Image (cartoon, rainbow, N blue to C red; front, side, top):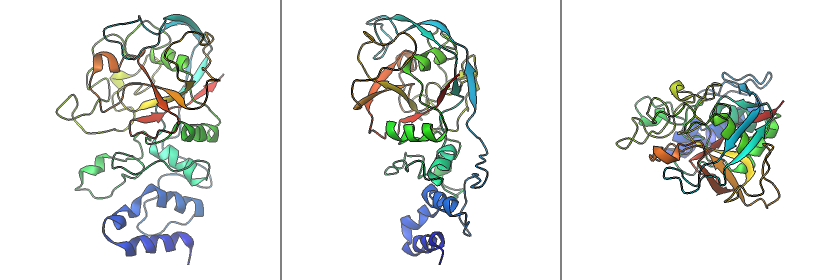
Length: 304
């Protein structure tokens, strides 16, 4: 019996909650690797032969320039911002329009170039794939949601698979500022709204729980058309995390050479609602490189 079909049979025999995970993307990835589609298995739109995705990674050119990075020390609305403020020169580069999606990451897993994301909680998009139309979970785990529950190392795997890299902190902030403009949010200086960001905590600040499909709120795009730079998942960047920008490069490159323990993360996360500072383009965080939080995903960059 074909190994994939045997896996399907075994899943079906287990019954209960485990059988409900029959359509898990891990099974779909196995089907893709074998080129065999079993009855009842909904395979993501990834062609094993052609590598065609329904929504492939789209890159947007970000023209280079100079900008002021960071924020004033002790700024009332700044959260863990980079100080001191400094002038950075960024070369022209490309950035993916969206965070990497579940479908896009599944292609990499299917071809054996990426390891599976964590799926130990219901908030990890990799496992939350359902065909139960009566379940509220239908909103969750869609192939066009950002992949989350991935570590910095897994983000590196995917970047190599696509012939790309993670953006540096400087590149990320420059792009989030719509090309280095002196604005507070990706869309400008107007206050955040649910039409501009992806804060989705019901009864607190949003209308739907958890992550949503990418580019749901175009009003929050940057001037170059980048979607969801804040308010969706936070995003891994290349840099090793430092509390201060003192001694950091001024040419737009990443901070390296401090060990591989803590890496920088950018962008406001969907499950917090302190928009006056969390969604600022200068807000930053440090996370262990091995962390595979439900709040963290990533997007790609390419040098020109």
